[in-house]
Length: 381
Ligand code: CAA
Image (cartoon, rainbow, N blue to C red; front, side, top):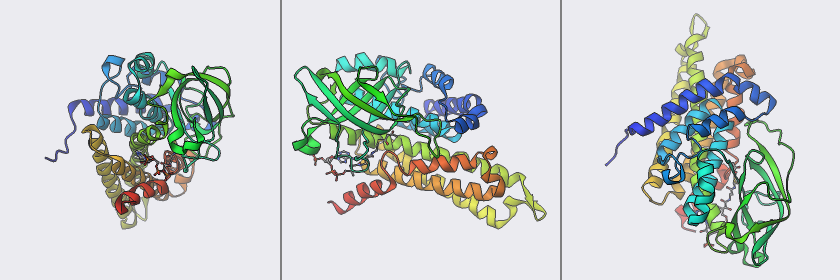
């Protein structure tokens, strides 16, 4: 049975996220983008409101909402400030979710309550200088020393690297076993031997906190491993399936934010004797943007629905990630075009949204990686 209605709880979460974004994030989003600074005060407030434990079981201090509510919340935050949304997405999808899904009771009890309330934030450490899309080529080593792992190596492009307290590290323990020798290990950031590279000065998502992370003889207790020995790559891939729903929501939220601004501008700006929205050149752009957003939303909600109903969602998540990211780029580019010269200056926000959209085609699996996942499934490779 098809049902396109949202539940009352889902609508409530969406409204709470929308109100929060407009009240707390909008006033200084341009300043944070310009200076590349973290929304520290707002992140604390988001934690108090439960947004860092949206899908976590209430017995671990979470809110216990479903993926659909999570999608709606990330969209609303991204409409205004996608840098805050990526922090939320990485924390919820790539750290809370695997601890809850693959962790022991002791790991869940130790880490989830503080993660769910935002007292502790999480980061996911997979990418390396020479292992980006080709994620099996992990060089960071977690050598089994009996009662602990000894970790050495470098991770790159780590979102939340400096504000996070808890790292979910993917590292190689048995290189001869290739992807079956990889482990996923919870590492507390203040463990001796961990240092950060400088803040990356990025094109967009400038107030998201991105660094490389270096490990030098870092000792991590063996009981911090998630799952069985050698299951880390599979866990990382499964985590990314869910992470891609988060990034698709972010991309779609960016597109929605640019669309809202383009529509408002098309209603107000006059040229050749009438509002530009009444010129077909602009009206048809608005129509095309609306169709793309609607299509993207349907794909994304289907992926969320499959996940919530415990059905296979790898392909749906890859399709949603690819399509939402690609249309975010198209919609934001058209929003800049509709604004003309005003679109090219910072005050009108759409150039920022266009810069933010670009990253959604790159991180958590490029659009090309999503096409590999989708085409392999179709061709049954
Ligand atoms: N779900 C579950 N399992 C999966 C999977 C998925 N989506 N993709 C692969 N696997 C499993 C395979 O079934 C296989 O298992 P077996 O060995 O038991 O058969 C194993 O993982 C290895 O898979 P492949 O042989 O397909 O591996 P591959 O080397 O050909 O490539 C890939 C797989 C899909 C290309 C993968 O490397 C990939 O997803 N790369 C992109 C990595 C990525 O997304 N990085 C993002 C970094 S995180 C980030 O950006 C966070 C942030 O800060 C915002």
